[in-house]
Amino acid sequence: MRALFLGITLSLFGALGADAAVLCKTRGDALVARETCRKKDIPFAVEPGPQGPAGSPGAKGATGRWPVRVVDAAGNDVGPAVYLEWYLVLSGPSLVGLPIAYAVAQHPALGGAVLLGIDVQGNPTGAVYYASSDCTGPAVIRADGFMPVVEVIGDTVFVPSGPGAPAAASSEGLNFNGGCSGVTPRGGCCRPFTGPLSGAVAEATTTTLGELGLTRPFHAVGP
Picture 1 (spheres, rainbow, N blue to C red):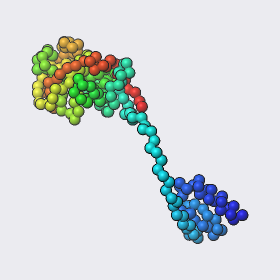
Picture 2 (picture 1 turned 180 degrees about the vertical axis):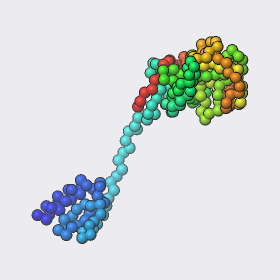
Picture 3 (picture 1 turned 30 degrees about the vertical axis):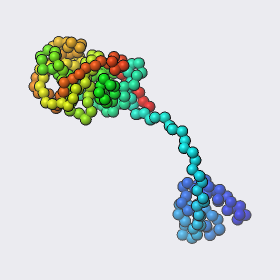
Picture 4 (picture 1 turned 60 degrees about the horizontal axis):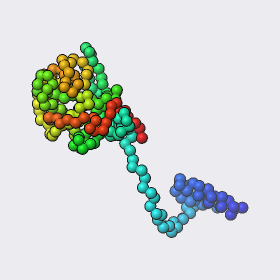
């Protein structure tokens, strides 16, 4: 009977071995697995067996994906969504909060990795500035962040051409959101802007969403 009890206890040890730390001999000569031996138990030493040969390496797993990505209307990948920011914008006589999600986009025409802002309707966002009063001539955009941010007006994508510097502007071009005094050559809203721009700005080069192979509206997808 004792041998049978010992066999049952060893089988139990095989099931609990991952949780137990030691083997202990009880006063009744049973061998049990415990986290620590009790006061009247006798620790039972077990020497580790020989190490078996290493198995062959497994197959390479699939490349991981960022938890949330932004895709265009055709399902083309834009890039990972990295953060959400709230802006105050003028809507009629009131200021309203507008959430903007930023995705990391990469394309040769963009000169590397850039941030592309997307609004709650799935449209890209943008604001560019001009020295002229009617949104004509060279456009400048903010260029003082860790990663360049592109600005999109209509289907035109404005990309900073280099490091930024302080500047002033007389007009602002953006997607329609109130207070427009005219329409920009690229279809956006033109409105007066007075004073220096906060932070550094750089003259922008332009491309289009079509040249980037992207079609509005955009949306987010999970893993």
